[in-house]
Image 1 (cartoon, helix red, strand yellow):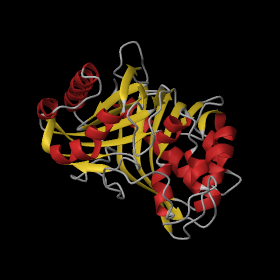
Image 2 (image 1 turned 180 degrees about the horizontal axis):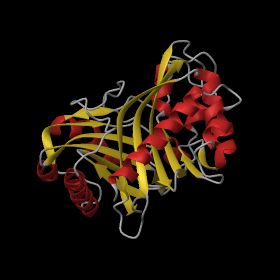
Image 3 (image 1 turned 180 degrees about the vertical axis):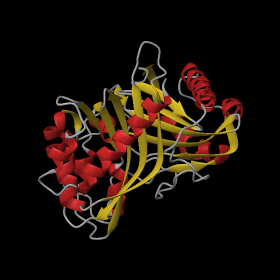
Image 4 (image 1 turned 30 degrees about the vertical axis):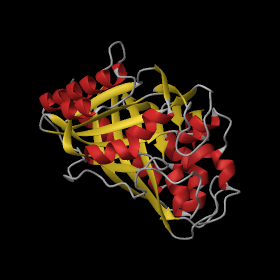
Length: 335
């Protein structure tokens, strides 16, 4: 892949962000359309789901968010780009992860405002072709936002409820060029780890962790599951409840996998289908097969993975079981 093409794609996405972030309410669709294809498919987490074109994205997501929390300040922690490494799938993708910060002064999705500073955790994937954004995915952590308003949408989580940090090394914004060999090393490590994880039925025994991860690894999961650190904490805060509560049904693969430098990741739509036969996250058992739309971003350190940032569309996962978490938020009192 030509390095100039990669850098041009990054610049295009950064210019897109700048235009959208600076746009006034009522003009967000116009700003969003400036660098996107007219009928661009956009994937958003529940309740935004799949939209087509700038007008639909603005009406469904951008305008309501700006009305509740705008003007928003973008605070990215990770930014990288690369070609899709999945066989048979092509395209150059640009990824950014961080928080959108604003003053939450008006209701959003039925949630009452905190009337304080609020951080909406997000990760975006943009596929760039011929000088335009051809498709995109935007994962946001709405449950984390609910916690900031003093709401308790789910029973207490097993991991820690925190404002998710960026990389420990503070080098996640890859605006410049990087050695392609480093990106390939990162991608090979992610591929090997994921392939073994699928073979294990999404279980993570200690032998698996030692093979692929640094001992002081950190796992920053979505609100409702929470964050965990080191092998002991990772098992206690995530994998044990995950393996005990869920039955693995099927892995669907990913829309894209890419890496640059020490960073890489993927998203699936959906990634897996699970059944909550033992109950999950404090919710009752349910036999309905339910899809998990998942993002995983990774930082490699040497020959092992060191940090992992995860988004899971839990609102969609529970909606497939007949549970309306957003509806519950309108009824649950503040803590």
